[in-house]
Image 1 (cartoon, one colour):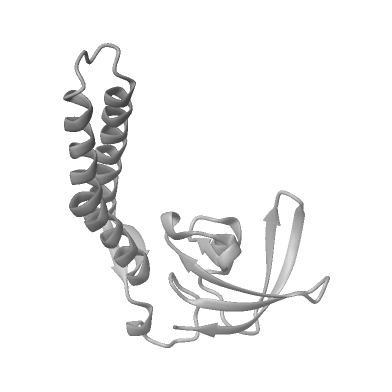
Image 2 (cartoon, rainbow, N blue to C red; image 1 turned 180 degrees about the vertical axis):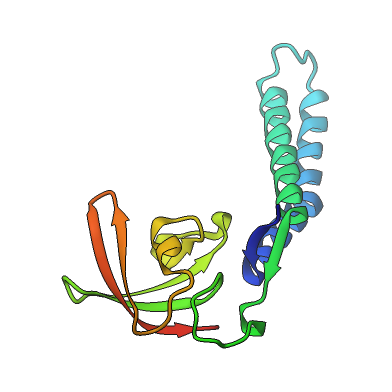
Length: 157
């Protein structure tokens, strides 16, 4: 099954992959070679640290490649503007109890960052919002109890 990801999220992963393969990997390999030249590898902390860093970097490269190969990249601006909340849309909400206004974009699991207003498609609030339209009121079960939001605006940006 493909994992949804925004175009911005896919671009960020591609950039990280380019950096890790093209810049970081050669630096780590040079550090390993330098440490190896210092002699006895059994007692060479610099060598072991470089090898550990190399392993971490290679693991992250494999992780990014797997995520990109399994991604279904969604360009939100190309979606039909039906007014319905779908993956990638940006939603303005009003908390019906407190009156607080919130703005979230529904993104892939790896892109989620609540501080930036990016919520995972698998989060309770995103699951409650998907399929709804502006003007609808939704109830979301949260760890702090059930909250009610009115959908003010749906944007495809």
